[in-house]
Amino acid sequence: MFPCCIKRLFSSQATNPWVVEKPSSAENNPWFVSGFTDGEGCFSISIVANQKSKTGWVVKLIYKIAFSEKDLVLLENIKNFFKVGKRYKHGAESVQYQVESIKDLEIIIGHFDRYGLITQKRVDYELFKEAFYMVQKKKNT
Image (cartoon, rainbow, N blue to C red; front, side, top):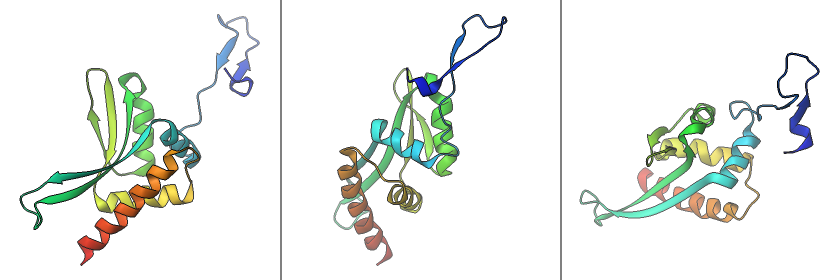
């Protein structure tokens, strides 16, 4: 527990005088979203078979974060922050937020260009962004 997150309550009504304040909401803090992605996010690049494609293959890009069902409110806050993407059930006790469409991934790319990642995940993001621009260019030609 960090001292900045602890508030002492002076009340005879309090059963526990030490209460942890709620963390900053993802709905209004872009750095919170970037930090959470640094820890729990994933930038996925997959090459999957697709018979409709000329080559028989297609590149699939996905930004995602997985949570325990207990943290569903936090997942919804991040989804509401970006205003794109979908929520999925993932396993027995977890949920996942995913963004897949090229149009929606533009919002994700814009966010992380403005509010950068600070862990090794930044390298993953840079490769993801490079693949995104290649796919975007291909779709526009």
